[in-house]
Length: 207
Image (tube, rainbow, N blue to C red; front, side, top):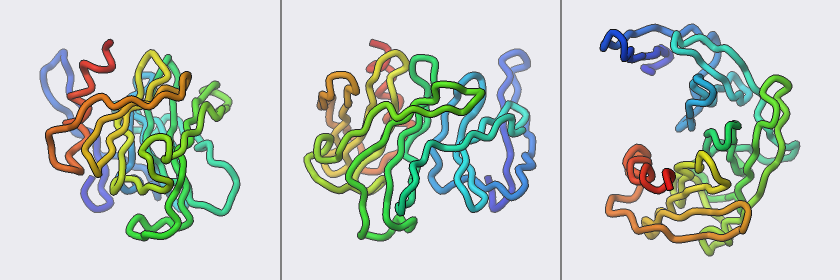
């Protein structure tokens, strides 16, 4: 995406070539540092037009479905951390802040909310779990991108993978046992690209 121009680049294994198509999403814009995932053969990402929406986009770049996020009513801004698929269902992980300004040191969140989309057609979200940053990282408040990142969810189990930036640790959180496990220390700079971490996770999530 350049400026307000949005496009989809699709690779065909049949032709061995890339195609390039511009997207007409109207007033929708991609949310800053938006998480995204392929779920049910669709690219799911966060768009906004004054309100936040989870949308599914096909290989032509066309919006096929607009899903209302599972935000709870309250005075805080919901900030999206991760979108992914586990056990055949879409999962949405976010936290809340008192301000939408990511540069602000005040109003930091103290927990993650993990939702599962139980019914894709009726858009029924169910709150699957909440976990405090105190349990995850040993500190009461954290900021996304600065203190941590949610990098993956296990495709078959109730496991969420996160990076704690202050010590470059890759950790897992088990939603069933509530156990937090240290998997490894990443040999890379803090704030390294997500694809580097996900490459490391290829061996982890397959077990």
